[in-house]
Image: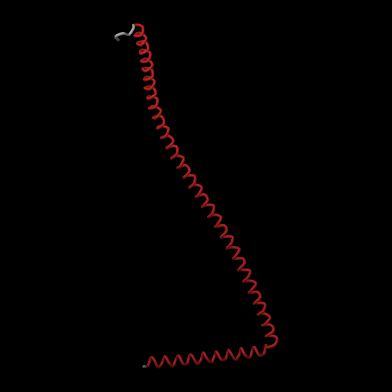
Amino acid sequence: MKNIPIMQKSQREVMAAIMLEEIDALVDKVETLNGTIVQTEKNFQVTINRLETASDDYHQAVLKANLRSKNEMITYLQNITNISVAKTADEQREIVQKLIRDAVSKEVITLKKVLSESSANYQGNFIDRWAKTLLCCFFMALFSSALTVELLERTWIH
C-alpha cells in the first residue's frame, strides 16, 4: 500500500467485496445443495424401504397364488385320475365278464353237444359204467369203514 493510488485501492476493495459476495452466495448454495442432497438421500432410503416391502409383498402374493394354483391342479388331476381309474376298471370288468361269458357259453355248448351225442350213442354204456362206478364206490366205502373199525378196536384195546 505504499504507492497504490486510492482509486485502485477502492476498485480492488470493490472487486474483493464482489468476489466475497459471490463466494458467500456460492457457500450458501453449497450448504443448500448439501441439505438437499441429505434430504434426497433420506427420500431415496424411504423409497428403497417401500420398494423392498412392496417386493416382499409381491413375492408373498406370487407364492400364495402359485400354491393355490398348485393345489387346484393337484385336486383337478386327482379327480380326473379317479374318474379315469373308475372308468377303466368298469371297462375292464365289462370286457372280462364278456370274455368269461363267451368262453363259458362256448364250453357249455361244446359240453352239451358231447353229452347229447354221448347220451344218444352210448346211453346204455353210460348207465352201465355209472352203475359199476357207484358199486365200486359203495364197496370201497364199506371196506374203509370196516378197516377203520378194526384199527380203532386194536388201538383202544392195547
